[in-house]
Amino acid sequence: MLKMVPDPPHTLHSLEDTLIQAAEYAVCALAISQQAMLMQPKSPAAVLMMATTHELESLRSLLESALIQAQTPNELRIQH
Image (cartoon, rainbow, N blue to C red; front, side, top):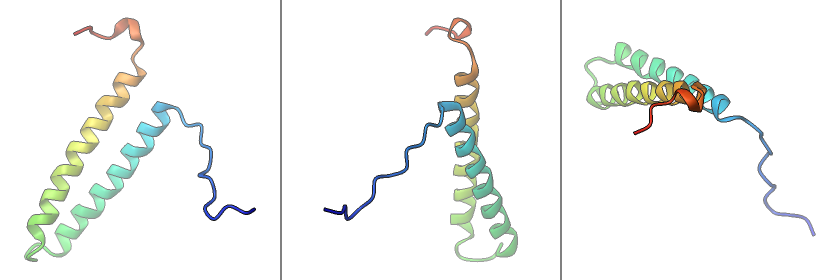
């Protein structure tokens, strides 16, 4: 019997690879939202675009922090 929905592809990405890819997507999305703001600064949706830009900047910052933590050896991490 054939499956109706195929299995998702098996990806063996490391945590670092996944964080890097997510950060790259965040940078692309940030560039798009900034471009949208430049094209339509007086649009009623401008407030939403500014909020999106702010949230994407925060996301990028968090992803970069997570990547640094993932790349730091366990012995060097500060214990809380």
